[in-house]
Structures are given as C-alpha cells and as structure tokens.
Image (cartoon, rainbow, N blue to C red):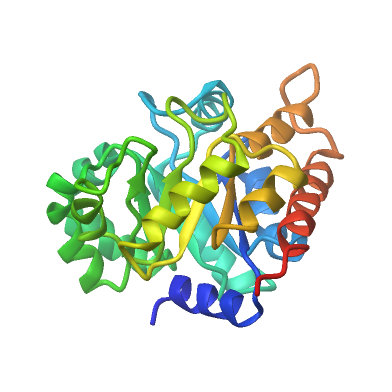
Length: 277
C-alpha cells in the first residue's frame, strides 16, 4: 500500500478530508523552498505536491508561472528536486508524508520514463500529477510507475463526462484530481454546489479518493470543498504567499517561511474543521 493510499485511509478513519499543499521546488530559492517543504507537516498539510518548474507551463496561471520562473532563475533542476525529497525523507518530522511531483510530461520523457521513475522512487517520491498527460498516452508511464511503487494521479474536469471518465480512471491510482474550474490555475473558484455535484458523479465511477483543486484561496473555501471531497488542493494561493514574502531585491525576507506556513495552517484548520458522517 502506497503512502498516498495509507494517508487517505487514515483520513477516512478520522472522518475528515485532507489538505494537499502545493509549492514549487526551488521557489524563491532552493534553501527557502526546502524550509517551506520541511515545515508543511507541522503546518497541517496531509499531502504535498512539489512542482517541477518547466519553461513552457501551458496550464499554469500567472502565480504558478512566476513561481516556476523564480525557481528556474535560482537554479532548480529535476535532480535538485529529487535531492529536496531525499533530504526531506532524512530530516522531516513526518517522514511518511506523501509527496507527489506535479508538472509536465516533457520532463519525464526527456530523461526516459523508466529512468525517471526509478530515480523518483529512490529519492522518496510517491507519485506523479502530470497535467498534460492524457489517458490515451498514460500507458507509456503507468507500467514503469507501478513497477516502482509510484501512483499516477490523472486529472478530471467539469467537461469530463461519464463516457470519458472510465478512460481517465483506468490509469489513475492514489486519488483522482478533479479540476473544479475550466482554464488555468488560480484564476477562478467553483461554487460548493458545483463541487458537490461533480464529486458525487465521480464517486459513482470509482472508489478512489477525490481531491478538488483550482481556485481555493480561503479557509472557508477549503472547508466547503472538504464537506464533499476527500481532499482540498491549494497551490496558487500558497505560492502567492511566497511572492508576498520577497523583498524589493527579490530575495526572501526573514518572515517569508513563517508567513507561508501560517497561511497553510489556516487552510488546514478550515479543512480539518469539517467532520464527516
């Protein structure tokens, strides 16, 4: 059983949803990014998405794009991202925290799928969310990921109808990521009624947990998602807090890491305040 599956089982036993927190590896610099990563468990995150910055992020909104640009400028690489995860497994308070790499398939393809999966697993990664990998091409990744114990989390959207869902779910493991609004990250928010309806529909097709993301900015919005889904996923709003902690010179101020973690803590409190029947 993967760490992702174990974590969702623990959340279900506690009758609550989880918080999936996204940060971009290397943003605003590798050292500061690692301090945020290491602090996320104590701030209340239940799973972590670690973004792999890419030069052509077609689905990212302005906030995540800027985070990736800051990280690339600071010298982040795929190998450095693996090193962050490896160090986390040695030093963090919650060594069983599920960590998923989120990004674009080009980074996997260029390195070689089997090699990428092997290196990710050895570093301590638990799975992938590759936003541009459709189910028709997921069979290139899935066998290698599964052989190394890595989950593949595929995305569904409001336009993924009942005919399309089985194709997505065929290659999904760990959980299903429901993108609650159409378009790029961090620009719009879905209504609670819309989230409830779509989550209910997805559950008719799978027993996998359902995480909902895109557009969650406040503890209240996170709690609204938690009333219906198994996890609330927050990304753009967290990296906005990273940006807010930069000085005029673009360098991290001393209050950046505490500010980001305090914000994550408020989101976690919103999610964890919802108890399920």
